[in-house]
Length: 86
Image (cartoon, rainbow, N blue to C red):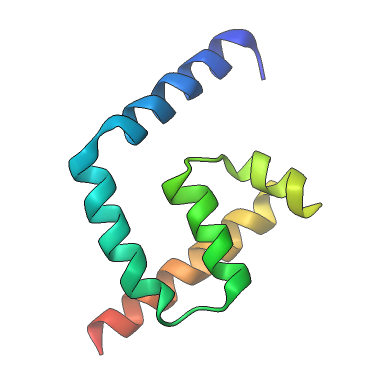
């Protein structure tokens, strides 16, 4: 990742973290989701949506591809949407 892209990513992360209203709504939504997921999925969701880590950063920690991480997150979101509707 070039320097400009990394700087833009850090600025985006700061904006997400510093918005208290958004952080509160995210925490509330995550609380509902966490009632239904296993510990590994919970950590993945926290890292991505609360801590703002990229799929690349998470993938490196898990020794997986970023595509695999994004797919897992997509499946978790889909499952949460299905349960919300029922």
